[in-house]
Structure formats: structure tokens, C-alpha cells
Length: 109
Image (cartoon, rainbow, N blue to C red; front, side, top):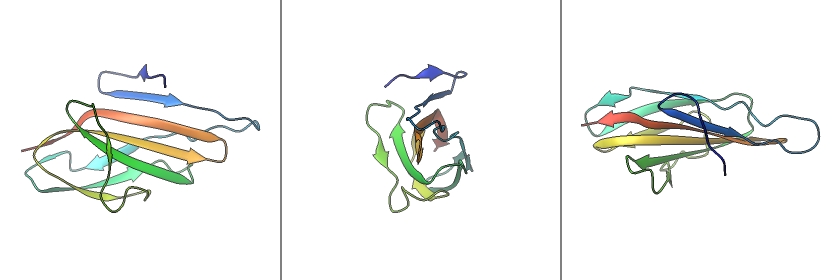
């Protein structure tokens, strides 16, 4: 897997499959991004995909785990404990998949 920097906090990669189409243009937002635990965050994912996988990692970024319960929804709600959280969204369509990562996107106290 190859990551390309896109600013200080965001990295993404776009993979294309055969057939002349493009993998989805992936992006997401989440709100609120700062708060007190337990913090419920509502996410909104890219719209040109047919499948989504939402994952989170603590600030180490070593291990990503799927969101609890709504990991494959386009617009999930996830509850976060205290910490700094990195979020990864993998979006897929008939032509391939793309990943979008926001490093230290959430800060929960």
C-alpha cells in the first residue's frame, strides 16, 4: 500500500481497477471533533461509493479496528473514549477502492 501526503493531517491513496472507470473519490467529515468522553461523533462519507469500511486507531496508528456496529454504513455514529483518534475510511465501487485517513482527527478528554 502506498500513502501520499495531502497536508499535515491527511493521507490518501486511490486505486483503480480495469474497465475504464475510477475508484471512488473518498472523503469524510465528523462532528463534533473535540469533546468529553464518551463522545458520540456523527460521520459523513463519500457519496460516489457503493460500500464503506470505517476504522479507528489511537494516536499510535499501529492498529486499526472497525467501528462498533456501524462500520459499513455510509454515515455512522461512533462513541469514543478519551484519547486522540485517527480515522480511516475505505470506500469501494465497481472500479476499485480508495482510502482516506485523517491523523489525530478527534481529541476526546
